[in-house]
Image (cartoon, rainbow, N blue to C red):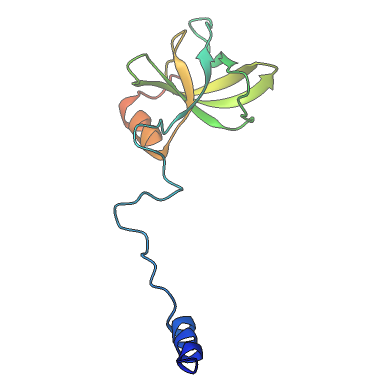
Length: 130
C-alpha cells in the first residue's frame, strides 16, 4: 500500500486540478459595472457673454483635467449642448474654447466617451466663425 502512495501523488501532481475557468457570463474586471456613467463629470458651465467663444466652467474639487482636453457640456436630460477644448486652468476654474454647439449656464461638463463625442458631432451645429 505504501508503494502506491508516491505513484498516486505523482499522478496528482502531473495531472493537476481542474479548476473551472471564467464563465462567459462573468464581467471583465476592466469593464464598468452596469449602470455606471461612461462620461466622467468634471464641472459646470458658468455664465459668459452672448457672443463669447470662450466659456468658463467651475471644476469639481478633485477633478484632474489638463489644457488641450476636449470636453462636452450636457443639459439636465444628458443631451450634448457643446463641444469645447480646455485652454486654461486657474484653481477651480477652467476656460474652454467653443468648438461646436452652444453651452448654457449650469450645464454639466464631462470628459466624453467616444460614443458621446460622435453623437455630439452629429447633433450639434458648427459654431459661428469656425
